[in-house]
Amino acid sequence: MRGEVRFLLDDAPRRLTQFDPTMTVLDYLRQVEHLTGTKEGCNEGDCGACTVVVAKPQNGRLRYQAVNACIQFLGTLDGCQLITVEHLAKAGKLHAVQQAMVDNHGSQCGFCTPGFVMSLFAMTRDFDEAPDDATIDDVLAGNLCRCTGYAPIARAAQAAYDLAPRDDAFTTGETETLEKLTALRDEETVEVGDGGKRRFLAPASLDDLAALYERHPEATLSAGSTDVGLRVTKQMKRPETLIYTGRVTELARLEETAEAIEIGAGVTYADALAILAQYYPDMGEVIRRIGSVQIRNTGTIGGNIANGSPIGDSPPLLIAAGATLHLRKGQARRSLPLEDFFLEYGKQDRQPGELVERISLPLPPEDTFFRAYKVSKRFDQDITAVLGAFSLTIEDGVVTSARLAYGGMAATPKRAALAEAALTGQPWSEATVKRAMAVLEADFQPLTDWRASGGYRMKAAQNLLYRCFIETTDPAVDTRLAGAALAGVGRGATG
Image 1: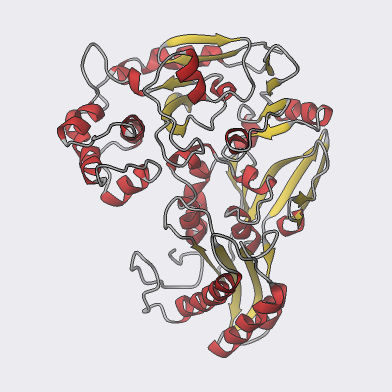
Image 2 (image 1 turned 90 degrees about the vertical axis):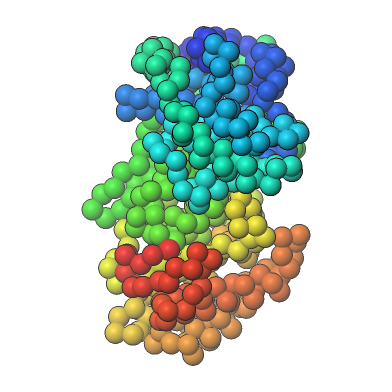
């Protein structure tokens, strides 16, 4: 094992041999490095004031991603470069995105400004040219501001490209940085403690991870820390042993076969988005609305499944599409339909020391259509009240198979078995759909909480099924916020 975490802070090497395993990047920056440009706002990955950029080697280049420092654990920086707002200006000259913010009056009180600047900096590494308004809105959805009304910041996002944002020290020094980061990477398991019993472990291979977790089934697994991070910052939990899975390259594999998309448990939302949207456009759109760019850059599909939340967005989508879950404990592996993994609230079919390895998502048959809808108070960056995902096969006007999955309606993500039975073998007609909508009341008894009442949830769930019927039978009806009419019922249907 290697007894240190190694990374670059801008271009300066850091080797840490002792720290609190749950120390966040934000606390490290402010309390240890005394870099206070990065702010604490919500401390839960929602407001974006803590946004920093992490660069990692990928395919011979550096990939720059905006992340929330307030919930990212310090140990996850191993083998990476950490860039903060203090590092952008070089030789007394502001970076292009900083200058654009000044020129367009994008800052007032200034508290949120460093986070916006870092999101814009990451954007300029992703896009060669100024993106359109919708993309800028998506890039900035994870950064909240109470002063400017966002318009000046959006103008700064476009204006930055007039100032050559890639003509900077990060571009000229990329080869050297890449060499430094490559030299930091190895196949050793990292183990760093706090001087007591608590420790941070980061294996570099799937075999090592499986063996480590089997020996320490009491450990907390963390991939993107978008869930575990909140347990630390909001619930004040301090796990004794934290195992980070982000160095395991096998878990980050995303492969397409003739029959399925194989999604490693460590594949992030950001990395999965393009291929999911290609085959399941509605699934891609729901994934795009999960959290923010910062959350999607770190949050993983496997983690969303493993934590078993009844309002997690990816499980209903994958269940409706007929996904299979693959688990591993030591050298033993097993597979099961994803819907069978969720047993009851807070309980999944996962043994101590057993981890989620990958998900197999079948490619949609030509005669099957898939629709998915997320209902939340805010359109972007909000937790779901109700999510409905529907996969139906229709032959000669008759429903030959139906998979209806909902989130937010029960203690677990769950299929609507009785409503499915009411559809199967029946004409795909308004009368059939209305009967299935009525049957939903026997499938679910939704609870009331601050997101929605039980009555609202039931009505929304019923109407989402009716919306699916309208979109697949009368594409001229405008049912989407974007105003795009749907056409076709096969894998080419738009979301």
